[in-house]
Image (cartoon, rainbow, N blue to C red; front, side, top):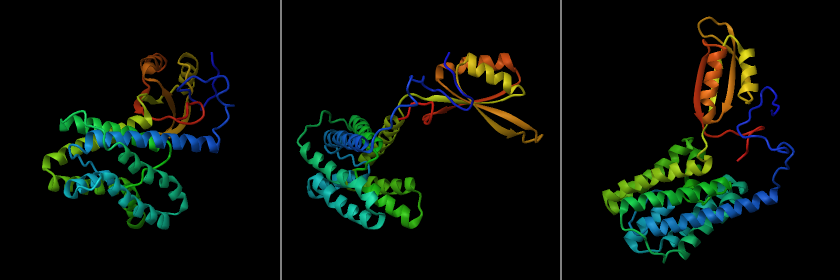
Length: 302
């Protein structure tokens, strides 16, 4: 049986040299970041041209503005995106610094370029609902890859960061405000129905980004409060073959000191944990909840 020290968990089994594996070098990490940016930007571009542009689904951001501009004045979306991205980038460089610039320069130029190169691709459907769903999936997958590479495609996210920096408005709220303005404009300039489809696309995009960032694997975290913490620790370590962490707690009513055991485990191990706890201490109090990301020593870093 694999040995584990108290205070360590094992969501995925250790490889023999997992703790001695050399960290990724700065150059390798930079190459991976660029590759993810390229792939992600390409996915965004083809999803934009195949699904969103033909049906006028402006689901927020600079890309949504470029669709509105094309609808009103016939200007190619890529040109609008460059016209907005470049001033926003320069403003961000001036106000947010060089570190910010390095992460956004390539994406701000690359995405409109790929949008231009794939602008002649033909739409596979004329169904607006299908287009909003598949367009949202493609854009979300692309953005998820870009974010995993710790890069950015620029756009209204830069404006949101500036608004957050100088007004104190939460970043998520700032992004939602800008996207909301674009979708509202789509409802006025194109059709109210397009705004509704844009909301569907925006929702699918956000969920797809989460999926790409965290994956399907949802592990569980269990908190066990018991009068027999030592006995429970032994069965978790040896019978369940999981690590655990002991937390100090106090009863809210009695004020008595209590030991809380925290265990991270897989979905398929929940029943076994409950059975072990029940057989060891039938009066134990157990809380089990989902956790989508587990990082650190003893876990597979993503």
